[in-house]
Image (cartoon, rainbow over all chains, first blue to last red; front, side, top):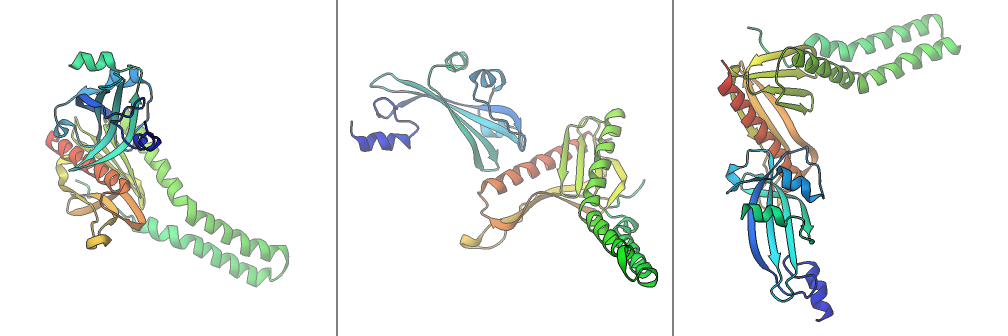
Length: 117
Length: 192
C-alpha cells in the first residue's frame, strides 16, 4: 500500500481506513432529525440518533426548518471493515447546508439500521 | 380593531431629544451659575455621559424587558408559543393552534400586539439576491408580512458584506425565513 494512497484515503469517506480499498455502500437512508434551524445541538452518542431519527422517503417530507440526516452504511469488500456515516444537513429549497458528519466505526448503529432494513 | 403601529413617534423623538434637552439645560445652568470648578465638570460631563449610555443601551434594554414581560403575559393567557422569532428590532410569536400572532417592536415597546393571523394579508421571503455573475449574492435575508396594509420586515440574516447565495449564512437565513412564512401561513389557516 503506497503512502500516497493512504494520504488520499483521508479525503475519501468511502475508502477503507485499514486497506484503503473503495468500500461498497450497503445501505443509504434518509431520516428527519427533529431539531430546528438556529437551535442545532451536536450529539456524538449513537443512542441520541437511534431515539430521535424519523425515517422519510424523500427530502420533501421533511418540514421546512428541520434538519435531515442521511445514513450510509459502508463495508470493505477486502477486509470486511464496516463503517456508518451520518451526514447531518439542513435542506434549504434545492440546496443542502451540511452541518456535521459523524462516523460510527464500532457498530453502534447496527441494530438501528437492521430495524429499518 | 386596533391598527398595528411599528413606531411610536413620541417614544422615538423622546428617546433622541430628551437627553439632548437635559444636556442643553445642564450646559446653560453651568454657563450661568457654575462657569468653573467641580459644578461645571459635573453639569457638563455627567449628562453627556449618561446620554451616551442611554442612546447606546437603553433602547435594547427596554425592548428586551418588554419582550420578556409580553412572553410571560402570553404564556399566562393560554397563548401556545410554537415559535418565537427574535428579529432585529422586532419579535414575532406564533400560536399555530389558535391562529394568533404576537408582535413587539423596538420603537414601540410599550404597546404589544396579539392579532388573529387572519389579519395577515400576505407573507413572503426576501432573499436579498443582487448582483450578477461572480458578484451575485446577498447581505440580507428576511421574511415579510402585511398586516392591515402595513409591511413588517423581520431580518433573519444581515451583514455588511455580501455573501454568495450558497453560503452557510445565506442558506441558514433562508431556511429560518421559509420556516417563519410557513408557520404564519399555517396560523392563518387555523385563524377564525
